[in-house]
Each structure stands twice: as C-alpha cells, then as structure tokens.
Length: 289
Image (cartoon, rainbow, N blue to C red):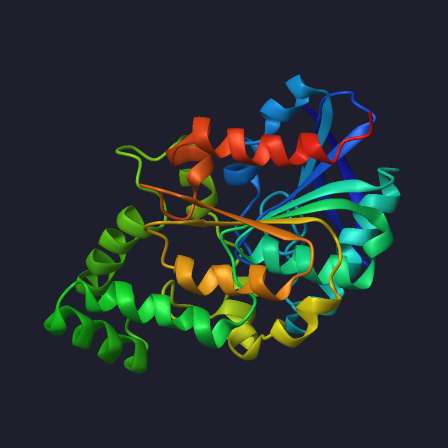
C-alpha cells in the first residue's frame, strides 16, 4: 500500500493507494472522524479487479492532521478536500464510494463536481437527517422503556460516559453497527480512534443521536438534479432504516437500490460475498470497455 501525504489548505491528510489500474475507486469513510481503515481495508480487493483503490483519513482523524479549529468542520470544506485529494493524486474521473457520512460527502461531491465522477455508491446512508433520526429512536426503543429513558436522561445531562450508558451503547453497536461475532481489527481501530473535532462538531458526542451541525442536513429536494449513476445500499439491521434510505432512490433519476439481509451498518464485513457481488456488479457495469 502506497502512503502519501497531501496538502489540504494549511494542513495535510494521509492518503492510501493500492493497485495500479487506470480506473480509480475512491473510497470515503464515515463519521465524520472515523479513520478510513474500516472501509478502506474492506475494499482493497478491488485492486484485484483492475482498479486503483484510493482512500484517505479525512482531516481531523487517523494519520491526518488533527487541528483544533472548529471552523474547519463544515460540509463545503470537506467537499473541497475531496477535490484536492483527487487533483493532487492525479486520479482523473473516479468511481466514488462512500459509507455513512462518506455517502453524504459523496453526494455533495457529485452535486459540486459531477463531471469528475463515473458512478457513485452511497453506502448505508440517507440524505435527510431528520428522517434518519427515526432509526436512532427505534433501536433505542427496542432495548426497553427503562433503558431508553436512561439513555435519554444521560444524553440530556451530558453523562454518557457512565457505565450503564456505555453498556447500552455497546449492545446497540453490536446489533446495528457491525454484527460480526468478533469485530475485524480495522473496525476496532477506527472505532477506538474517532477524531472528536469533526465528530463532536458535525454529528455530536453521542453515537445514536445526531445533535451536531448535520442535524438539519437535508438534500431531498436536490436529488432530482443528481444524474450520476448511483447505487444506494441499505441493510436489514442498520440503525439507518432501509425504508428511510430507499426514499433517496425514488428521487434520483439514475439510481438503483439494494438491501443486505442479516447485516447492519457494515455489510462489507458482515456479508462480503453478497456485498461485493452487488457493488462489484454495479461498478463493472460502468467501467470503460
């Protein structure tokens, strides 16, 4: 894996590249602030299919600079970060894949720079945060009324580090983030090293309640103008509910949708065979022949 630091404004981000193909799969991680290893390592297999697979730790996390400047954590600045990475590495038109927040960022990039994207995989994400919040409510409710009340109280008090809250959050993570019996090491590494600058500012300090600047994010009305070929994925047990995620497909003129049974937020680890059959098939359909 080739590692290269790229200048982004006054700071640097660490990029990772594997494979030597002329066609580039640009992989974007979630969070904001979850280092890219959890999604990067699940997609390096596309190098064997002839792609150059490129990812990076977005500014504020992982091996990239982590400045203490809350003004940096905005959607428009991250869009320009994507463009800077693309041009600095000479990637040309890219096959774009984003998981979770990376899917939101991918949509924003398709809106700003449609000419630079061959096709787009929006992995386990919707584009109306108010609707997505319904999933957080549902999975907490499934823990029982008493536990739901406890979580709401501790979130309001700011005492989410208490062991009882952390115990409930751990159950939710194993049910709705990644349902493997033992989490893969790249997932553990990412989850243990969240960049709290972008995470706390944009999503908020709680894992299952968006209270940050993304809380009012809504691009539904703009989706009819996004003509990039798009695959929208969802999973049966994801805290981002399939019935909410699929709404985006209905607004986008050139979008497909697939749902992964038995999976949560990371189907590329939970059922890689089914996942790569669907995603790989979509990418192949849009490759130059």
